[in-house]
Amino acid sequence: MTYILYIKKIFFVILIIIFIIFVVVIVKRIGNKFRSENSPSSPISTPLSPIISAKTTKNIFYSNDSELNRLDIYSPENADDNPVLIYIHGGSLQAGDKEMNLGEKKDFFVKNGFVFVSINYRLSSKENDIKYPTHLNDAITAVNWIYDNIKSYGGSRENIYILGFSGGAHLAASVMAKMDDVAVKKINPKIKGFVLLDGIMYDIKMIKDAKPVLFSMLYKLPFGNSDETLKKASPTTYITSGKNIAKSLIFYTDKDLDDVESKLLYKKLIDNGYYSELVYVPNITHEEISTNIGKIDDAVTKKIVEFLSSS
Image (cartoon, rainbow, N blue to C red; front, side):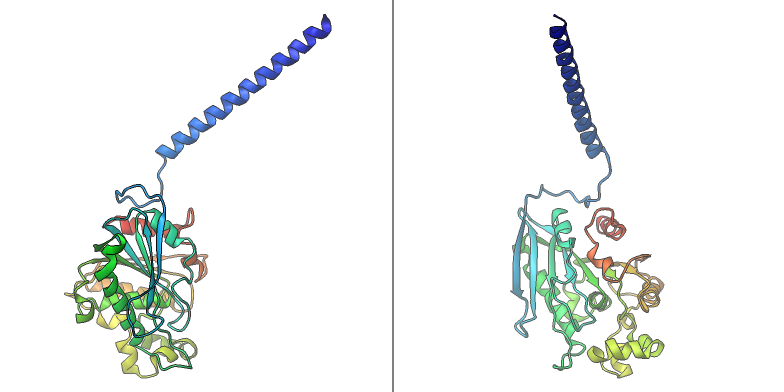
C-alpha cells in the first residue's frame, strides 16, 4: 500500500513539472511575439508588398566597349516600381569587381524592397592604358542603362540611389558633382541621393601635395601626374551653387586622408547650398565599413536606412 502511494506521489510530481514547463513555453512565446510586434526594427519604412524571395540576373552588358561593362541585378521576386540602389565597388580604380565586398548588403536591401544593382567598370593596370575618365564614363553609362531598363526588373526610374565604396565612392561623388553635365542630365532629377563609404579621391591634387608617396603608389596610375587632369578628375572641382545636386551621406574612418577629403567634400557641398550629412565611424577598418552593411546592429546600416527613408 505504501509503495503504491509513493508511486502516485511521483507521478503527481511529474505531472506538475510537465505543466510548469508547458506554461513557461507558452508565456515565452507570447512574450517574444509581443516584443517582435512592438519593438522598433531596422527595415526601411517604405510601404512595400511582402517579399518572398529574390530574383538574380547576372552579367548584363550595359555597354559593348569592354567585357567588364557588365552589371548584376538582384530584385525582390514581386518587385514592381520598387526603389533602386546602385552599388559601385572599390579598389582604387585598379582592382575589385561587382561582387567585391558585397557581404550581406545585397540581401539586406532586397529584403527591404530595393532592386539592388552592382556594376563593374574598366580598371587601370600597368598592362593597359585605362585612365581617367574611362572609369567615370563607364559608371555614367551604367547608371544611364539602369535608368533606361530598370523597369523591366521591377525597379522605379523615379527613385534611384547610388552607393559607392572607396574608389567607388569617388565615382559616385563624381556622378553627383557632374549631374548637370549632358551625359547624366536626363537622369539627374531621378537620383534621390548618394551614399559615400570611406572615399578619398574627392580632391586628388590635394592628395598629391599632402602625401606624394601615397599618391604615387595608388593614384598616379589611374589619373596620371598632370595637375590639370587631377583637378578635372576631382569631384570637388564641379560643386558650385545652382546645380541640381541630390542629397548625400558621407562616411569616413581613420584611413589615410579619408577624414580630410570627406570633410572637404562635405564643406564644399554645404557652402554651396546642398544637403549633406557627414558621419565619422570609429573603431572600424576600411573594409569593414562596407562588408558590415546589412548586419544586425551595424551603426552604418542604421544610418543608411534613416537616410534612404527620409526621401
